[in-house]
View 1 (cartoon, rainbow, N blue to C red):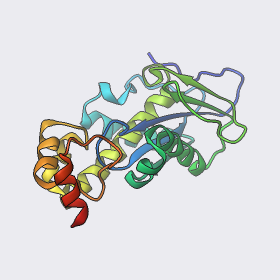
View 2 (tube, rainbow, N blue to C red; view 1 turned 30 degrees about the horizontal axis):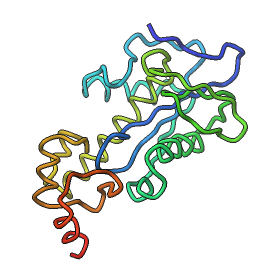
View 3 (cartoon, one colour; view 1 turned 90 degrees about the vertical axis):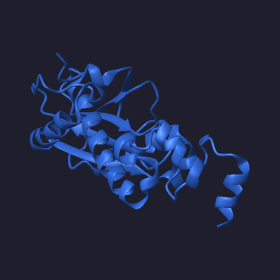
Length: 204
């Protein structure tokens, strides 16, 4: 069973997580969630441990039950400019900015973060499997990013994003080899494209 809060001093606590960091294409998404301090939900878990159907069902529950929730987005163009680590943290900061309730403490999945104003924070490795608010944030970030990549698949259908969400699968690599990068590919990543093909795509 996941814990409701990390800090027990009565501070308003927000959990943060991101989705799409390892993808070759598309924006990175992050979410921030503030749950009631006595909140319990045995169905909540790390989004990677849930089926898509359960994630979307839980998204409705989270949005209904949370004291506040928000999603932040950083585009592929921004990722190329500032790198994916900075982009992931920026997406979390943007989600925190959009909360209707100001957090007094922040817990973040992983081991890297940068100060958000003067709010104290703790990074927690595999926090999405330990604390409810981080698990909730992981579900929101994942489902909203999946919605976005489904929409992008309809515009750029060659890469199989409806099934791989931008991750480097065989189908995605094959689409890159045959069609080159789309306008939302992260060009700072190793896309596995021959330089001659890449140069040709850049000229068109």
